[in-house]
Image 1 (cartoon, rainbow, N blue to C red):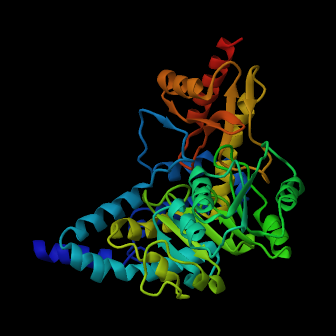
Image 2 (image 1 turned 135 degrees about the vertical axis):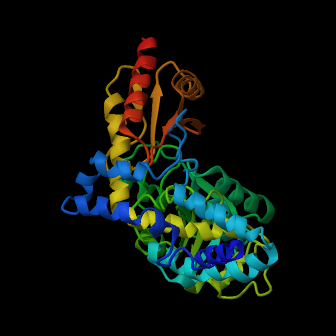
Image 3 (image 1 turned 180 degrees about the vertical axis):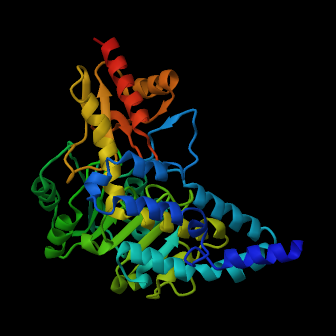
Length: 431
């Protein structure tokens, strides 16, 4: 009987996240269906403020009751269904690693690739699955055929790992890495596009643009930048670490040539999962970051030669896609933007308080920066946690000095009310 139960469990797991027997279908499909049915007559913007609907989503997470986590911009928790999938795949793997990893779980990569491609709105033959945005983007940065004197344009507000990757290429190979500087928030796309265009010279080969600036949440006009760059014969790399799984878009909408993201942020996939996209006709020109027997191949899979890695993490991504899809990309975007605006509107007019992010929907969604006059970001971050058990992150980078606040779909309004009261109390003490 025990062997029979194990056999049935194995067969259920091996059917995968995209079968009728997926864990999501077993645990949440019915409750999500009922919740969606109740609000089907409402717009996504109206549903964003429907607390009864979002309480169903909130119950699917296992977040700590002892702290309020408002640093989902760093890494997001996975819902229970993703955790259970990861646990089950891990247990299965350890029953016979070399068999269950390489001969069983590895067979799930192609269905997963297709589902990620469907979500991203691109060809599955352009998607590689890896461990995070840094790995995806560094694969592109180090894989490009650039020579001494070729120029790359980025910004001082890009993510440090990407800045350092470009600096390393500049130091080793003599490429020219130029950084423009922005004072966010900016509510003018043309101003942003023009700044990139003004930095272009005859030697410019690449523009590196961050879709959502991780420090303060500014949404950059990637499509407009890419269209401008292509008119000058320049390729565009997009860092989508904070946009994929948050904003309702297709990668193809961005008109970029290369895209990398982490899946453990707003998609709520297991920690240590990421995705690389390269336009099909450009794959053969990019060298893989890790060795491959055919490095000039046009097969996207050459970027997945990572050796032994966590197959359970990889396969559990599927349940995160199920969870995300059941909510809906636009509905999810509008809810998280609603949560950001909810707390920001409460604190923006408090004396000594400053908001460092636009509250217009075109220019921000989840991430918002806040500061209190007379307190450093570190002091504010520490006070929020030590006194109120609210977890945020202090940001001091280039010309940015604030605390970054990032809610997610599981965030409750009463937690944001507590955060707003904390900001008011701390600001009042600084009068």
